[in-house]
Image 1: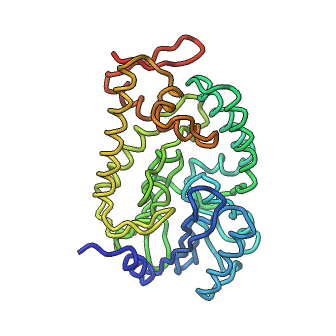
Image 2 (image 1 turned 45 degrees about the horizontal axis):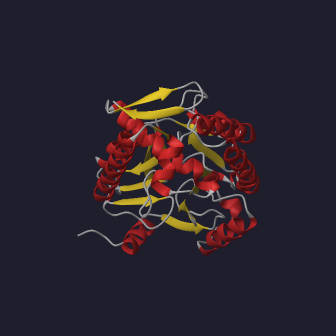
Image 3 (image 1 turned 60 degrees about the vertical axis):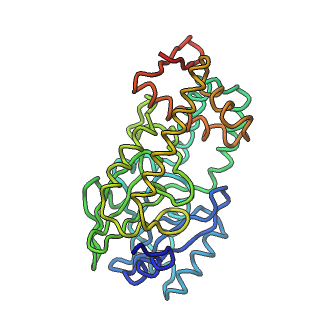
Length: 333
C-alpha cells in the first residue's frame, strides 16, 4: 500500500531526514531543504538569500536542537538561486564544507559573472526565436533584480556522477540528472529507498526544462527537454519508495508521476505539431498560440517549453528548422 505524503515525511524523519519548507519570493512558493541528522550534520539546499529565509531556517534548526554554527556540510543540488542563496552566509556562520557536482563548481563560484553570461545566452535564444527586443530588455532587468537572492558558492567537496557521499549511518549515491537545469543532482539512499530529488521531479508542477548554457560554458544551445526525458527514464527505473522533492509534498509513486509527465509532454508535442502543420511559426508565435500574451516574466519559461517540444519533433523528423538569418521558424516536413 502506497504511503500518504504525511506518512512519507514521518518515515523520512525516522530515517533522520527532516524537511524544512523555507519561504521564497518566487511564484513557485516555498523551497524544501532537508536536514540529515548524521555525521556530519548535513543540510541539503538552503533557500534564497533573504532575511526571512534565514530566520525561518534558524528557527527550524532550533526546533531540532541545532544552531547555524552546528552545520558541518551543505549539499547543493543544482544552480538555481532558491536552492543555494544562503550558502555563503551559512558557511560564514558554521565553516561547513560545501558539496556539489564538481562539473558545476566553477560556475557556482563565479555567480555574478555566470548570471550575466546566462542572461546573454537567454537574450540570444529569445531574439533568434522571434521574441521582440523590448521583451528581452525587460526580462534582463527582472533577471538582474533577482540576483540578490543568490550567492557565490565555493565547492569544497566536489561530487561526481555515480560517486558516493558518505555519512556516518548512510551512503548517498550521487546521480547527475540534467534537464531542469544542467547541474541537477539527486541523492539516492538505496538502503532506505529514499531519493532526495530537488527539482528533478516535483509533485504538482512539471519541472520546466529551462534552456540554459551547458556546464562546460559552450555556446551551443542544449536540448533541455530531450535531456530531461532521458534523465527521467533513468529515475523511473529506480526502486524508490519515497521521493523528497524541492517543492511540495513527498512523492510516493514516482513511476506513475513520471508516466503522467511523459503523457503530458506527448500531448503538448502533438498540439505544437498541429500548429506548425497549419503554417510555419517561430517559437514565440507558437508560445502565443498556446498561452496568449503571457507576462514578461514568463516569456523565457514558455519559450523553453515550446523549444523543448520542437526539438523532439525535429529529432523525430516531423519538423525542420528554417533559419532566415534573423529568426528560426519551424515548418512541417
